Image (cartoon, rainbow, N blue to C red; front, side, top):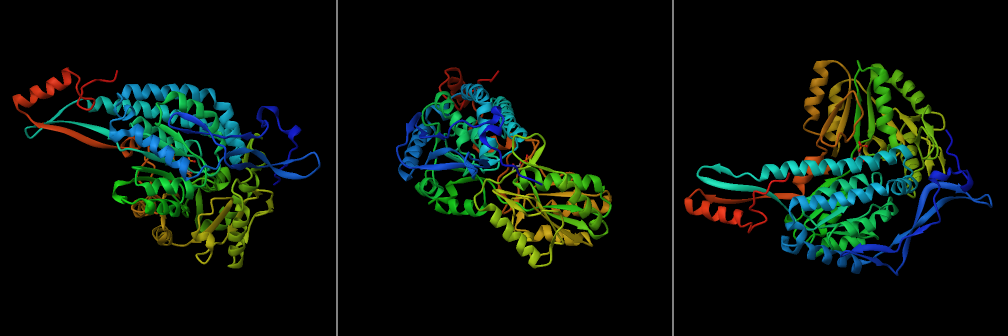
Length: 536
Ligand code: G3H
């Protein structure tokens, strides 16, 4: 396996980066403000050979290192746009809010190639996957719009129950702080931010630690398509920027996809925790369970995809494989061949699945996990497994892995595949139960009785049990959540609209006098809430 290092001239023109993009603007209160302070350099994980023969990670540009002051200005703008729920955005008819988002979608689609290129370079995501991330995000927003129309149509009716009539509607919660992860910096942030916006919440958006520059081409569209203060985009170190927002107590919803430690630290800063609604996607250590009667080809293929797609940098990746002893040797040898057939290289090369890792220091961390596993008796089963070249690492298949090893417990979020054996499915159930995480499992096999037993045990531990396939989030209409330290709240196209809103009821005893009051409000259009306007 070889991670090649091109010269600038060897990079195809269609994917070549221009001169470094030194971004100074950030968006607060509908204004793109020019930052005069320090900037944070953005390097690609991809290394390039310079004219003098030296090799270095490509400098892509830089982003503003804002301080608490600018962060609090963004908060003030969002609080003003909210205006106790009476601002123009939260009170705007749903159809008009949708029109703003549709305008944004037109502008976003026009920036596809720019955003995809930055996404690919900044986190090393293979080009096809970067394109898929962009398209999936657009589709997600389109689907969210139709789900909202549907929900709003249902909300125009009145219910009559026990002599009381009522209209139940969902209203926004307030200022939402949206932060996503570096592995899906566009999709995972927009899939919380747009439901939040569509429900009427003003948003403060802080891009992930990597995958930051790709937001720059969209800043003007955010400014032009939304009223002032409805979308605010800030940059900088989390502690200074986001910490101050949480400490203010004025953030009403925290949408955060990251580590549970990060989420706990942020939630703790809020002075009135019960007023904060959290929507969290956190750590996971999904287990792939290969039963004795599993279809070996299928299990190997799905486990390879599940463990190593985008170098294992998916929250839904399979991060521990447990194989029944009867199949273990055959599984490991076929798995190794499958891994050795994967193509490593530059993210724009066709068929590439393995690329360099964006996190500085990540290969050292992974080498530490690998050395610890070897110290406790695991072997690297594939040729070159664990070899580091620049910011890239050749995947390492480690076998047999045991509970004594860090790799059994820690979420590697990288190209290390720990494989272990089991004799009885109770050992698998114990591993799932003992894990502090509970996002998903993959279960490979045929025996209905054994499969049923594992399914029933896992159903109370994880949010999704995948039969004979890898773990994954999609389709986006399915609930995406987790138990224990893996998540808080459920996301899906329809669920996200719910989590960013609360149901409020206007109720009255069914009397002639009350009917007349309600009728007068409706016909005179005196209330935005109490209304039977139907979204066509
Ligand atoms: O990193 C977490 C993503 O939501 C995973 O999504 O399963 O579609 O790759 P995916």
